[in-house]
Length: 291
Length: 303
Image (cartoon, rainbow over all chains, first blue to last red):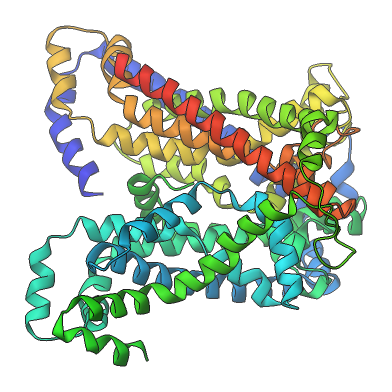
C-alpha cells in the first residue's frame, strides 16, 4: 500500500502538467476498463438475480433481468432441503485445521532449514524442493489406496492430512527467514533462550507477512479443493462445499433459482474472506507468485 | 512439549543442533513422507504391476506392459491433447488480457481497489460455484448468453454438446474465473516501475500509448515471465472445470489427462495402469514446463 501512495505522489506533478491529449487518453483507458469490469460482474449479478426470482420467472422468454416479484424462497429451499449446512461445517473444520497445521508445521520446518545449521540440511531441502514439482492431482490414486489402507476413507483425517503436506509453504517460510538479518537471532540467543523459544517469540512474529500469505492461501485452496475430497469422501453428509455443490444440479433438476441460490451460498464465505483480507491476499500474491 | 527436547541445544553443539532440527522438521516431515513421498514412490512401484483397486496387494508383475499400453493408448494421447489444447487456448488470453487490464487500471488515480476487487473476486470462488453459474448461462434457449444472442437474431446454440464449442465454453469460463490472479501480479509489477522513467519520456514528447508499449511493457518482462510460466503449469493441471461442465464429454472429446487418470483408476479400477499414466503425464508436464520456461526466459532477456 505504501508503495502505491508513494508512486502516486511522485506522479502528481507530472500529471498536472500533462496536456489534454494525454488526459483524454487516460479517460479512454478508464472507460474501457470500466466497461470490462461491468462485463466481469455479469455472471455473479446474474446468479444473484436468478436466485431471488420466483422459480417460474427464471425461464421466461425473452430472457430478462427483471421479475414482477422477488423472493428468498430459493434460499429457504436450499437451506432446508439440502445438506448444505453439513457441507459448511465440514468445509469450515477441515479448512481451519489444514490452515493452522500448515502455518505451524511449515514455519517450523522452514525455520529449521533456514536457521539451524545441521548436517544433512542440503539433502532435506532438496527432497522438499523436489516435492514442489509433483502436482498433487496426479497422486490421487496411490493416495487413495494409502488412505484406504489406513481405514481413513470418508473421514476428516483423509481430507486434512494430505493437504498439510504442501512443500511450497515450507519453501516460502524458508525464503522469508533467509531474508532476515542474523543479528536479530544472536541478540535473542544471548539470553540463553532455547531454539524453540527463539522461533516462537522472535521469528514467528517477524514472519507475519509470510504467515498471512501461507494462511490465506492454505485456507482458500483447501476450501476450494475439489478433486481430493471428491475421491476420498463417499457420503453426502461428509462432503465439503465444492463437492456437495457438484451434486445439486442434478438434484434440483431445472430449479434454476435454487441452483443459483446454492451457488451464491457456496461462494459467499470465500467472498467475505476476500473482502476482509483483500490487502493481505494481494500482497501475498505479489510477493510469492503463489498459484 | 517440544520445548523440553529443544532446550538441550543451549550448549549449541552440533549434535544438539541436529536434535533441534529434527524436532522442528518432524511434524511436517512425517506428513510429507506419508502423504507425498510415499504415494509418489508407491505410484512408481505400482506402475510396474497389474494392481487393481478391487484386489488386495500389488498383484502380478507387469514389467513395462503398463508403459507400453500408455504410450500406445489413443485415449491417453487424446487426453494429453485436450490438456495441451486447453493450455494453448487459455494462456494467451489470460496473459494478454490481464496485462491490458492492468495497464488500463494503472491510469486510474483513485479507486484502483474497486477494479482489483471486481477482477479478482471470481478467483476465490470454488470451481463448482463457477460451474453452476456458467452452466446456467450456457443453457440453450433460456440461458443468459442465448438470451442476448436471440436479441440480435442469433442462437439458440448448444454450447456444451458440440465438442468445439464445449472447449471454447470451458476456456471462456476459465478466463473469467482465474484472470484476476494474473491481473494482480501485473498490478504489483507495475508498482515496481519507477515513475521518473515516464516523466523523462513525457519531456521527450512521446505519446502515451507509445510510452506504454516501448517502456512499460518491456519493463514488465520479469512479471510476464512469471505469469506465463505459472499459467502454463496451472493450465496443464486442468480437471475441475472440464469434469464439472462437460464430464470430459461430449463423448470424451474434451477429457483432460487428470480426468483420464481418475477414470482408469476409479472407474476401471486399473490402479497399476493409472499409476503408469500418472508417471508419464508427470514427465510430459515437466518437459513442457522446462522448455516453456527456457523460451520465455530467452524472450525476456532479448527484450
